[in-house]
Image 1 (tube, rainbow, N blue to C red):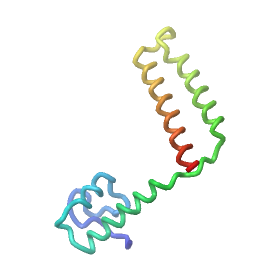
Image 2 (image 1 turned 180 degrees about the vertical axis):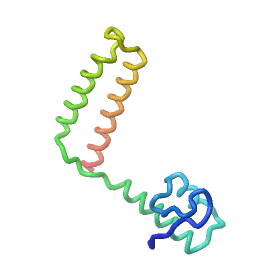
Image 3 (image 1 turned 60 degrees about the vertical axis):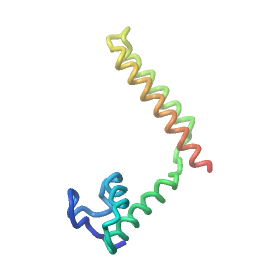
Image 4 (image 1 turned 180 degrees about the horizontal axis):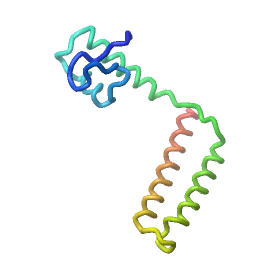
Length: 114
């Protein structure tokens, strides 16, 4: 794809590679856009979809990542726990962040093993 820019709309002058995903997907559904613009839109959409399916390599030991998450959680829990001057909400947010990190790491590891 040539380095084309968006010729109209909110993102006029923006490179296709820099368009937000949602905007690019919306553009790809429009029937009134003709080639060569349509080709550039579809090519960039497909390039992004392919990039998302390729899992990045895990450059570190997963056990070390788990230790890092647990250590960071314990350190912040000491600061954010309601019994130590923090709030219930802050502690709930910390637990949610830890859980999100653990799920994200597991999904990444599963993708790499495939």
